[in-house]
Amino acid sequence: MNGGRDAADHGLQTSGEPVDPRAEPEVSSRPGDGSLARLDAVKDEAFRRWDVTTPSATLIGRPENPGEDVDENLRRLHDEQHPAMAGHGERMHRLEKARITHAFCNRLSLTPWERDRALGIMTDLDLTVFGSQRAIQKVALVVIQHVVDDERQRILGLHDREWIAEQPPTSLADLHERFDSIKEDPNYRALLDLVGLDVTSVNRLHRTLQTQLDDQDLRGAVFGRDPHRDPSLPAFRDREPTEVPGPSEDETAE
Image (cartoon, rainbow, N blue to C red; front, side, top):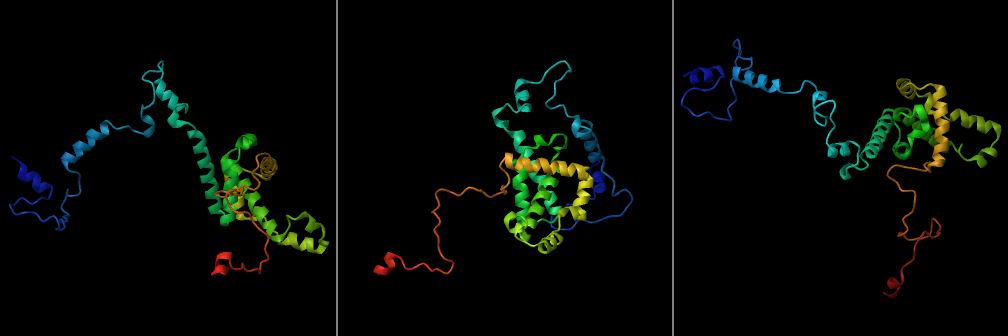
């Protein structure tokens, strides 16, 4: 029997004394101590022999022969006709738009409000109207440009046409000098180059976006916020900012 030799090779204690599981194992630096044991090597070779080389090598969900077809239930799953898979592709597309847009917002250091506005537009925006430039990355960058520039214009009051018409030319020139578009941000320009967008493509996508914001009713969309007021809430009433509510009838009776 070679039980003692195998035990010695694996660094196990061969005496009759019990082994303390809390004791730290001895570390040996003898030649061959760091190599794989023969039994483990055989097991590893046997398992790898039947394993797939790459994830794409699996045959799950494929017919056995080129002339055959897959099972009807499996085909219904692939075509999303199974009740358990209804709308799966649409949900995944919506999540992908939100994921990519959120990553761009983090890269460009947008404020939480600007991020929520960009996500609210992108998650519900129909990208098919953008034609050959309907990639999520391209449309998301244009949406972010629209949201950030719109918010910066609102801070300066440039969105109010009536107020702008009353301002003298010197004040308008000063306001436009203070306006800083995200198009001047080096990080934003680097992302445009990364996705393959030039100035002409950005302008074309921006014009299409402006039309779709009105057609799809997304101009006021904000992710996680409902633009419609809950009808169950009590109605607003006009009150001066300094007005203090008086005591109720019950308190007066007391």
